[in-house]
Image 1: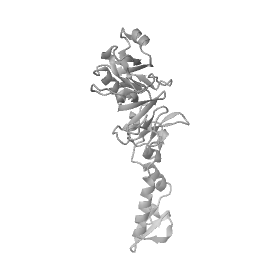
Image 2 (image 1 turned 180 degrees about the horizontal axis):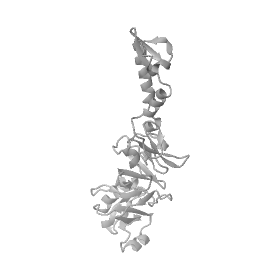
Image 3 (image 1 turned 180 degrees about the vertical axis):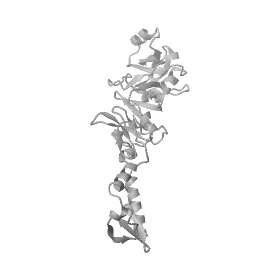
Image 4 (image 1 turned 60 degrees about the vertical axis):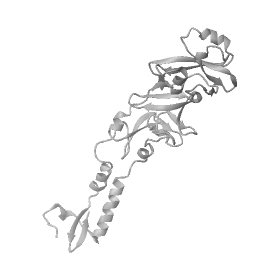
Length: 289
């Protein structure tokens, strides 16, 4: 029997006994309820494109694979038919080679330049557009990049050392790539009959065609995710409130996850506001409320 001198003497016993099995089931259900993971935390797990091991996470997100709230506006990524991550800048596709989350930069190249070969055969290039960054200033050209100008429809015998390939529109003509500071820029602008495209390459990347294939570096500006990540959360963005969010296992937080085990506050709320006490009598468990 319960000691009547304890706090339990004010509690009325339930009218039904609870067996060991009931207690186990009750505790398991309580634990399941307390350990439910917030769905946004689950949805915003890092993902990859099918044939690429580059992890995609905040501020980027893969359209159709991750929810828009997992990334920032303007940072949506698609997967190419070959399974590589693509960033669309001003209606031009850029292949993502690597994302550097620590210093908020990424290496990418114009998808049109992927046809360039490292051998003497060299591929033909499809028409493309100037590198144009969005007006949101989410992206910027990183330091130590070189401005390049591509001239389409050039005579094959002109400045052969600058030839990077032919044009798919006219395979008998050449595409030339020159440093924007090259003294021959004005001459080529007059002699070549096709499009003129402005782009950038990273310094010290070998020959011009190799540099075009390997691409360039962009920096990005977005909310810092390190504090959220360091506390076990996954970053996201609330487009309705236009604010950064930290998705944690228990719920959505504004900046970081709270201390303690996941679901601990919910477990305490369930049982501290409506405590149930158990004691055993005559081989039966009795519950008090």
